[in-house]
Image 1 (cartoon, helix red, strand yellow):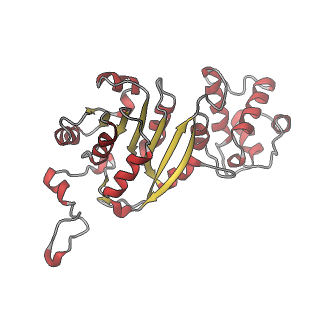
Image 2 (cartoon, one colour):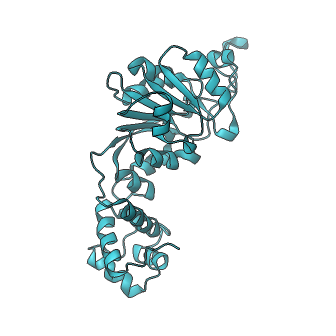
Image 3 (cartoon, one colour):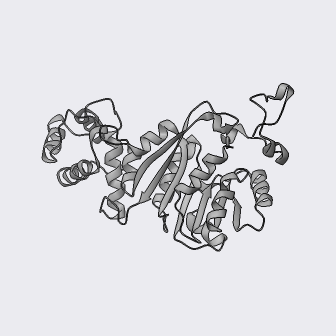
Length: 297
């Protein structure tokens, strides 16, 4: 897909023909790297497992490569693109296709507002290629949204993908916050050569199927306090849990050991070894024995 040059080869910095024809230039400040591998674009769209006529909210439309694959499968795509020039390019390329392109910052609008602007209805699936610096807030925004997507399929930096998925001994604040609402799965890695321009990092595709009900059955105000505890536990992730929690919660050594023992958790563990069930038991014990420990302000 690269343009012909002298001796039939293209310089690595040259764009593919279709991007050159569109006059598309990536903006480094926005972390723009365009996925140009058509097979991978198709695989990402397939991973969404769209029902006929189901809406997709795509974050980061770019020049519209993935958008075209999605609209071929469902006919209803709400695309969000912060770069107004790119949004205009995608709108021209996809005119009459059933794609509604909104020039907006995804962190400045809600999924409900996007659906309403484009006249779309839930249920919906969220998809996109997320730059590193917005991955966590975007995933959180959609998982906690009303309405929330039934599935999320995103391409992210490979190291972030592994943090999103977690697993025994590999949990993080990110994997636990995702696991509270959905079931994440790492689908496959994506080489940097699949992009133009090539990024310095490898990427991966992650799918999150939303749970029928949250795995942490707490009211909203308690959910916030629950994750305050999780973040406190990970404040010093290389330390044993009792050390990190003691300093983060302002408890004595004896108090910290007591709540961990009551929750059935080994104080010598590190936070990445605790799953959602462990954190729920610990949260209940902390709130019962030290209700002010999670107060903020």
